[in-house]
Image 1 (tube, rainbow, N blue to C red):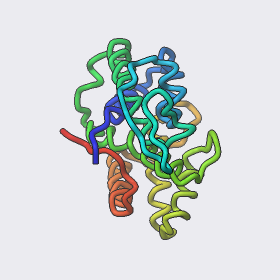
Image 2 (image 1 turned 180 degrees about the vertical axis):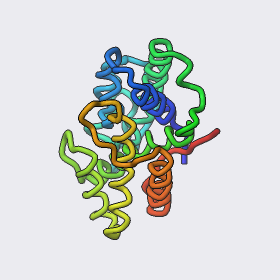
Image 3 (image 1 turned 135 degrees about the vertical axis):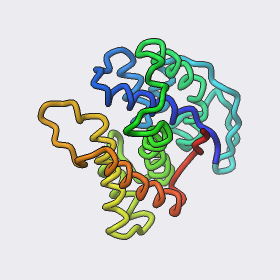
Amino acid sequence: MIRLIIDEAVGYMLKVIKSGIAITEYKDEFNAIKHGNYDDFIDLVKGERPFMVVWQEGVISNQDNISQKTHFDMAALIIAGPSIQVFFNNCVKKYGEEFLKQELEISNDTYRKAALFEVSLRVHANNNKLLSERENLENVIIKISNFKSLSIEETETLQKERNFINDIKHHNKPRYNRKFSTWEEGVSKFKDAYRILEEKELFIGEIVE
């Protein structure tokens, strides 16, 4: 697996959201990258596009015409790397370096893996042409589970991980009912889901402390 900056950037923003801070500046960029809309994200941030050559169905393409619409998601994600770094730097400058520090409730390692959870599933689903535009994560899990012939129990475990991420993003909202009574319980279920992604080769990237 390769090292990706997206886990740090999205993991950082999940910590900001959990703190109760409303994401106003860079909201469009954040929504684009966490939903896997890499072409839109690059257009918004306008970071440098690294050189890349892709061979696909007998055709060689260079960076000038590589896009998510015509090539696989992983290529688009790698091309988005410099824009993700710019986005990350801007967010730290806006929301503060304190969110780079370790929390007592949820580790930085868990935040980064939680960030890669949705990204990984969407990359694999899109690469296998399973999704329509703007599919929510619940449907992504259902479709990738059917494609990989996951058991009912495995699919339910992945859906519980989705609920853990929702707890992080929405627990400060007045009408939101948390799915896990404690963060410790949510982290425990997250670890179960993470193991499934690894076992089924659905994870991308690697976490380096």
